[in-house]
Amino acid sequence: MNLPRIALAVAASAAALLFAVPLVGLLAHAPWSDFPVLLGDARVRDALALSFAASGAAVGVAIVLGMPLALWLASGRSALRTVVRTIVLLPVVLPPIVAGIALLAAFGRNGLVGAPLAQIFGVTIPFTRVATVVAAAYMGLPFFVLAVESGLRAFDARWLDMARSLGAGPIRRFAYVTLPMIFPSVATGMLLCFMRALGEYCATQLFAGNLEGVTRTLPLACGLAMETDPRLAIALSLLLSGGSVAVLLLLKRRLPGAR
Amino acid sequence: MLRLVGGLSRGSLAVDMELDVGRETVAIVGPNGAGKSTTLKLIAGLLKLDHGSLRCDDDVWDDGADRFTASEDRRVAWLPQDPLLFPHLDVLSNVAFGPRSRGASRSEALRAAGAMLERLDLGRFAARKPDTLSGGEARKVAIARALVTRPRVLLLDEPFAGIDVSAAADLRKELASCFAAFDGPAILVTHAAVDAFMLADRIAVIEGGRRVQIGTAQALGAAPATRYVADLVGLNFLRGVVNDGVLSLDGGGTLVVAHPMEGPVTATVHPRAVSLHRTRPDGSPRNVWSATVASVEPSPGSARVRVAGPIPLVAEITDASVRTLGLRAGVEVFVAVKATEITLTSV
Image (cartoon, rainbow over all chains, first blue to last red; front, top):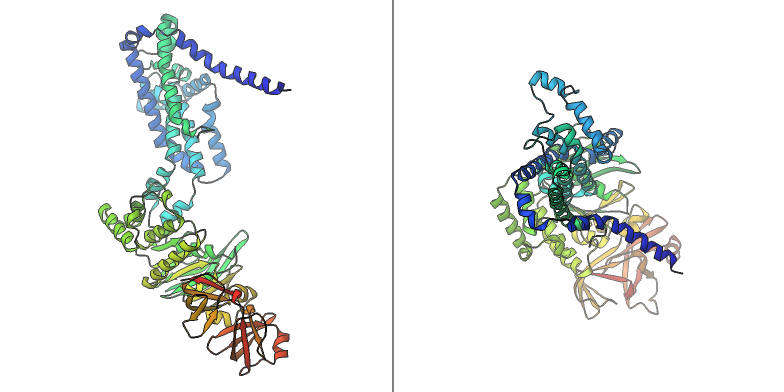
């Protein structure tokens, strides 16, 4: 009689376990007592600092470039906006390896933009710290733009009419009305962008390389450790998981079903 | 002096207005979708005229073409139905928003906001967030926020919508003193004729985006231009004080009312609820008096008969009755009004 409900419960439990078991596996293999030594290593600290710097810079890029883009995307409906939005959101669904190859094709030494950049200005991007930021921003920006645009679209323009009638010009309207009122969306966008940037592996390795102390971010260090010192890899994985859980807790109230 | 001639068409809504407002309060009354809010937005600079022009004193705010003064440069107080207090700012900062936007320093703006809140007896709310205020309180804060900018024009859209009767009476008093103290054109959009009568000097009736009539409540009642004006605006309004079920009118005379209200009120009597007789009627009406017919005006489908005497009223009578009763100026009649047909609004 209750067969459909039982089947549903079994399937749902299996799905939940699919997510829970790997995390438990990590915890079970955690070299708890060696943690301070493993994570205290200078190379780990370098990778950690590099990752945070690159991800933080990616968030900065998102704010400076992504905010105006989100404002424009949210300001109306047009075919051009749809095309631009599709391009911007592409990295979300693009396999990261493709993103890395595309970045190299554009900004690499012989790339479309990279070649003239190197010839005229003597600037090379690939395999530098800047490249880690570019890769991180490329992968993280869509999350920021998506979150901010949806916040802006849900924002009631009557508030701006009111601010306008009270004498507020465009800058004041944005800074004192729009921004504070859509702040939850902006914060969500910043966090999602930061976490996507922090976890970036494939595109970074291709485009920025894996140079210790220069472009070896935490995920790259983690991947390398898997071949040399699995205990370190697990420790680093736990560190990243901890950060991710913390972000989810921060976002808890913004997720579906939140109370 | 505000002068709006022209309008705009947007989808199904076309507004083509002619409105002159001096140093007075004009109430805009009209059915839903008549273009009342649109008219206010045009004046506030939130919409642009397609054709025509909008002037305030000697300034052309909108000429329907290239000349357009942005809303932020007009100094118009726009109070839409929803008070739209900024939810992220406390009451004091909400009120300080206008002065701050117009270049006052932070401390000046806060001082001006604090003074305005005190003036409207809202000082105790200064530190509160808007979502902790009642509907009536939020309206008053919105009024304070608008007035502190020293606006040249005051625009209020349905200030009593969605608030309870006692809060509305309180707010009505507040608005009456605001309008009295305000030295420029004020426009009040409402759908309640009694509010228009109580707060405004003149009433402009708009239907289908056009002004169909403008004048005092008495003028509209005596000669309504359309059915809508006759039914909803051309009413008898009487001021007085209710004491123990008896309304003593300011102009003399008394009426028995069937309303458990005490104190100063505005009484509304629909012209169709006023009946005229050649002989003293028997039966239920408790308010019967004799009066002289002052005039008989034709009105769409019927006639408006104005009676003089202690209680001047307009009665709406069918053309047939006008003939049977032989009504014309100078005829003596008995006027009857049922107590239950008198609606009271506390002042």
